[in-house]
Length: 104
Length: 244
Image 1 (spheres, rainbow over the protein chains, first blue to last red):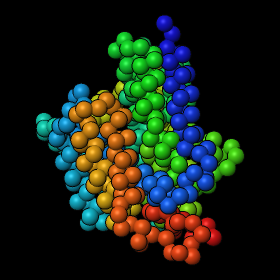
Image 2 (cartoon, chains in turn brown, green):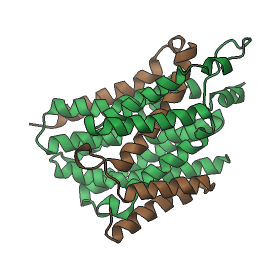
Image 3 (cartoon, chains in turn yellow, purple):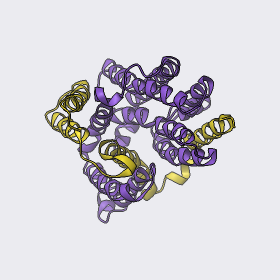
Image 4 (cartoon, rainbow over the protein chains, first blue to last red):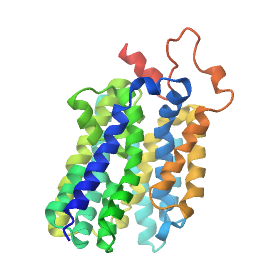
């Protein structure tokens, strides 16, 4: 069977979800609690994303490998006020280096 | 941050993310989708996690409905980003539709890393467009010639992405509320990961925002009584001042 219905349905649903955030009436987000909640959501979601990117193993298991070391190094670099590009290149270099050595 | 620094940040995120498009294009064709279907996913669905889920499920012989459901589960967080982006960046008309399409982890993270509304807007558009262009070009390349880079992990691209998100979150973490949110989100994600399917752990992490937003004692330090509306947390206060 053609994959087109799946491709188009996934795209339509994906766009509808993206747009949904923009069309929620402002007054629904103006309350004290909801306003604070919405402001903190990106931090919570991106922090969660970093964790899944760092420790997701096969079939959802947690694994510590080269990624975890690379992210730890990135965090140390950030604490030492390293610029953005240095942090990103350092993370890539640490992970690639460890893997070249046969670990993680 | 200097405007050229915003551009540099946006462009580097676009290039690094785009490199993954090569592996998506190759994987999609290997999973049995044709070139046009592959390109349609990158142009129309345009959210990496969902795209990999669709081709992964179809390639393994899964149902189309399962693919759409999983893709949508992974796409929920884009909608949640939109709530804050819409309020902070204030798009209207066709720009709002275009902004919605470009609302992904990367554009959100770069926008959030800026300290004023003008830079945040600039970072959002530049990153969204840079990722869109590179992601689509590399998808096409991957679909046509295969994954010439090999496994992106060999180059540490997966760790580069995680490192980039850490760096983009970092300026936000000066505020204690954001620190608490991030720490709780990390713990919730780790707890949820072994027990829930892909896409769910990050949504569980969103509960961290719900917990910290309602933290007892927070109300005391919140709005000044004369303020017509409660000051949003994070960069919101700065952004609103910039707009005035």
